[in-house]
Length: 613
Image 1 (cartoon, rainbow, N blue to C red):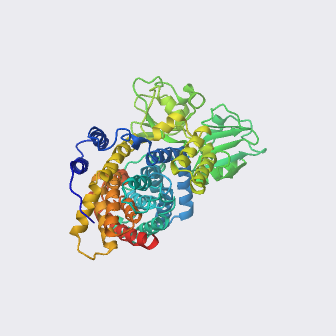
Image 2: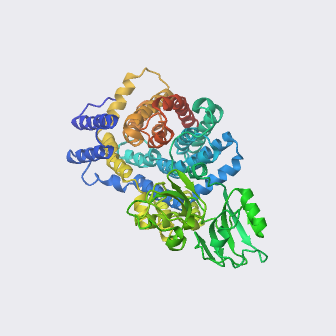
Image 3: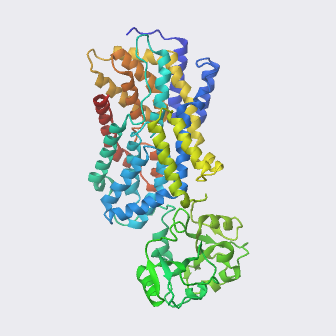
């Protein structure tokens, strides 16, 4: 290959790349601001044509990422992940290794159709809930799940940002290919599937067989504070424990005609949190609500206590929530703590005076006053400033009541409206979206946006919620850096680096060795300038290296896109950064556990890409 002369345009582009790397490394300036400055400089210097400079914002890659973020929120709002957590607990049957394996595997598969940070955001509360239910350390869950999500993102071309970007970069590279070179075609949706499966299996096996040694033993939960750890906390602090059961009132029951408040005062009564009479089902029913034949009561308490209450009062007990499944979905309702401030209008009044259940749809379960837990006859207990209230409610009702500042909620809870009744609709729309993406010639971005439109039209999400689901920092960063990749190609900077690299390498070096070097260099870049930046800089370079070495440009580019996510050791990977705090991982922990997996990642990618393509 004839070595190109270094031109002014090449120097400018390479200078911008160097500036991006330095600024991203030291993090003194926000990454999205750096990307904006790069975009402006590219426009001012004419390195990218003025009519093309903002095309990154309308690229298929950016639209696809926006769509996957919105689709992810749609699935979250329907409580899909909470249902998944319950299913995982049932299937694992109390076996720790099986629980870790199932959870990580499902998370990895989920990441094939959703942005990796979005999947991690969904699985953080799932992992937290599993940790609280099992007593295992949260640190034993998060890194295996994180690794599986990163590996699973390689299952499809929409699983992570580098792969979403790849097809756009391949199409853009066609404008600068030498004459006689075949046009580079976009890769189909499941092109990397075998490679992604191999990576996911390696991650699962790595933690399954070596997890005890890598992450420490199980045992008691650590002190990490996480929002979903409510069940074990409230059992320990207030004696509020047990599961929820449905009690159906028979014709012979002494409760028939009785007010709910009277039923609650019976000896040995569990917490009565819901009531369905006819077609009217509600959480926190008022104390004067009447119980009739066929009414269903939602009761919470230890199984034996609820069973004794059911037997004594001729009620049919069921552990399966057929009537209250949506109402008691943890994504929609749960237990919380709230403090009564000195300015509250609740001071001096009892829950009965306030008609708390009737007016606010909130049940008062206990009061912590001066470190003493009060649970007996609390409906008639006058409240004081400083009382800690333990409440059970639908999250939306809690948020509305808390807005009046009569109590201050101290438990983290889902602020947005949850719609578990839309679960089947959301899953159907998601399935159709994937089928459209697979079975038609439409661009992936259009297929994914079809799913977004479906969720909005069917009421799974509201328009404002869709806007809030988008991480504009991620979108802005990618859209502003995409023209830098174009400039690398059009200016000849990528070809110049490729030519000098080939000259520096020993003669007769096999193509796979060059590919391995490109993969390692991309992974190193991803530690410094993020996986998006590494992809944008390295794909044009890899294509030119392939042409110089007589290799397949598409293969080289795919190796770059896959290797850009090979960062399991630093917080520059957004998925890793999300687990470091909650699990209290140190940098040493990440390198000790992640480095061997990163090496395996590198070897698998280069070997399988060559074997398959």
